[in-house]
Length: 297
Ligand code: NDP
Image 1 (tube, helix red, strand yellow):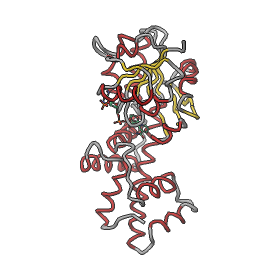
Image 2 (cartoon, helix red, strand yellow):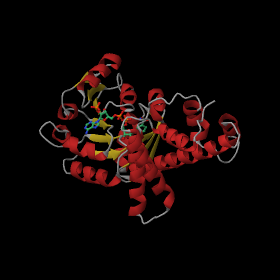
Image 3 (tube, protein in one colour):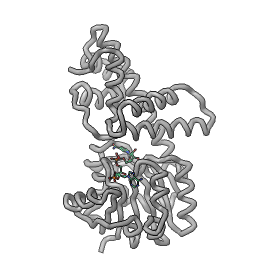
Image 4 (tube, helix red, strand yellow):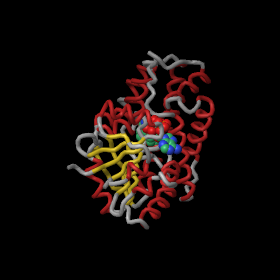
């Protein structure tokens, strides 16, 4: 019998991640909206369970992938809560893009029950999750990260142990802060170029053979903005949350530069303007509107 593993949080990225665990492990899934767990079982397999506690019971490894670390902290509580089901010797692998301070608190709480914790946020997007090629930034004790590694290899091709509990979340927050800065800066630059008579696709061709290129210029803008596709893969609200964590990290380390703070402010404003369900690249539409030009072609 393969080890029992559970996965809680079947959202846009949790679903494809969890799908890789089916077959390798005896998988239990839980989702706040139970209907999504039922759909998962129909499409991929595994077993849906009614409570977080039931998911943890008997599991040697428990994965979580929620919007925030506070959501995970709240999930631990109560008679049906996750903590009640976690057994001594189990390992909680949190793939949320969370915040270091809350993760440290959760790890200390679980350590008192003999349960290990690693923060293991991922990079690579929903496409990378579907392909099983995510990068994991893991924070935690060496022994816990080593224990989690074979499980993480179900959906990740690169697993980096970057420091103690919270270090994975810190690195992920800075990664996404850089993503946010790149999105805003590239959109502004392309809008200016378009109005000056340089077509966005031509501008990107040249930028991508030059030193201004980034993942945003090489992949995201050509495939999702210039085409007008704007697929919903990652909620702008979640990116705004990540940049906010990036700012908190910098403040806690007394690094006071303006770049990431400004990106956080702009993404907070974009979240207020576009709502909780908008995709992160729709921030570019606000820049287009302000500039009076559309980046298509
Ligand atoms: P979604 O918004 O698509 O899904 C969120 C999931 O969390 C849903 O299963 C939702 O349940 C559940 N949830 C929300 N609030 C609570 C709560 N209070 N208690 C319990 N469950 C809750 O998010 P994603 O899947 O896109 O993202 C999940 C995490 O992964 C985030 O931290 C995000 O920043 C990160 N991430 C996302 C990437 C992406 O490309 N989408 C890429 C890399 C990281 P319900 O179905 O009931 O709403």
